Amino acid sequence: MHGLKVTLRQDAPIALDVDFDCAPGELLALVGPSGSGKSTILRSIAGLYRPASGRVAINGEVWQDTATAAYVRTWQRHVGLVQQNYALFPHMTARANVAASLGELPAEKRASRADELMALVNLKGLEHRRPAELSGGQQQRVAVARALARNPKVLLLDEPFSAVDQVTRDRLKRELAVLRRTLNVPILLVTHDLQEAGMLADRIAVLHGGRLLMTGTPEEVRLRPSTATVAKLMGQTNLFDGTLEAAASDRTSGRLMWRGIALDVTRTGAFSSGQRVSWLAPADHVLLHRRARPVGEGMLNPVTGTVTALVTLGERTDVTLRVSGANVPMLNFNVSTRTVRNGDIAEGGEVTVSLLPEGIHLMPPED
Image (cartoon, rainbow, N blue to C red; front, side, top):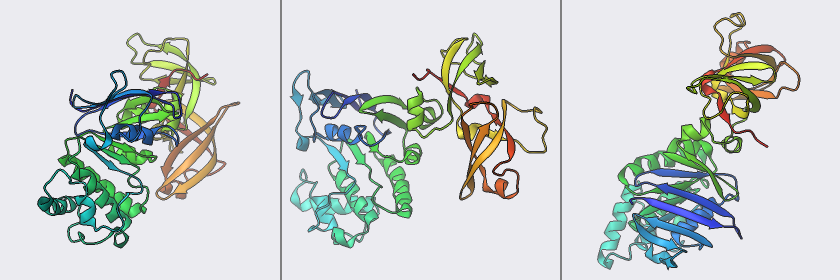
C-alpha cells in the first residue's frame, strides 16, 4: 500500500487511540487542544517515541509493529521533521545545517545539493549566514530544507509557523502550498490554528484526549462534524438539542423541533422521526433579513430575537442574538461592519434571521 498508515494504542503515560492514513502528496492536519497527542503521534512516526502498542508503515515498509516486534531505528527512517523551534545548529552556517542531513551523499556533493535545497525554499544567497543572522522565517526555511535533505518518505511539520509574526506566517503558508506541489510524499501538519488547517490541508484529523474523533475534508469537519464534541473543537458555537419531528423516507428533508420552533432541514442522515438529536447551525448559514422585508415573506426558518452583543473585527462584526422565547440559548452569526454602521442592526434591537435548511446539521444527542 502506498502512503503512510498509522495505528497507535496505549493508556499511559500519554493516552493514544488513533488509526489513520495519509496518501502520497496529501497534507493531513492534526488538530485538537493541547495534550491531545498531536506531537506524540509525530514523534512516534519519526521513531523518537515508542508507544505501548501500534504499527507504523510507509509504502508497505513497516517501521514499527509491536505485534511482531518489528522496529526501525530513528536514523534509518527517511523522515523529514520540522519542529516548532527549528532546532538548527547555532555554530553552523545555513548551508552546513542543511548539508548535515545529507550523510548519504558523498562529501564532495553535499554543498551543491544543500545550495539546491536552499534555492528551493527561497534562501539563495544566504548560504553562509548562521541562524542568529537569519530572521525567524528564514530559519524556518532552513529547517524545511534540512528536512527535505533526508529525501523523506514522509514530511512531519510540528507547529512550523507558530514562532513567527503574522505577515511572515502568511508568506510561509503560501510557500508551503507551492512547495508541496513538488513533493509526492505524505505530509502531516500539527497546528492549533483551525483556519491554517482549513487553508492548507486536504483532510483534517480531529483529536481529543489522545483519541481520534473524526477525519474528513475541511468542509466536512467544519460543517458536518460527526459529534457535538467535534463541532466544539472546530470552533462551532451554535450547538443545540432538539427533536426530529418528521423525516422523509429518502432522508433528503425533515422538520426539526427546537424549543417550540419548527425548522426545515434538507438532510436527516440516519436519524428517524421522533428521535432526539444535537444539531449545528454554522454561523455562515445564519442569514440576517433586511428590515424592509415583512417577516415570513420568502424566509426560510425565520427566527426572531434581540441583539445582545456586537463585536467588530475589521470588516466583519460578530453578533450575539437572544432568541425570543423562554430558556432559548444564544445564537451567534456575523454580518459586514458596514451593515452595523448603516444602522441595520444595533445592540438591544430586534432582528430576524434565517437558519438556512442546507446548513443545519444533525448529530447524535449529547449526554
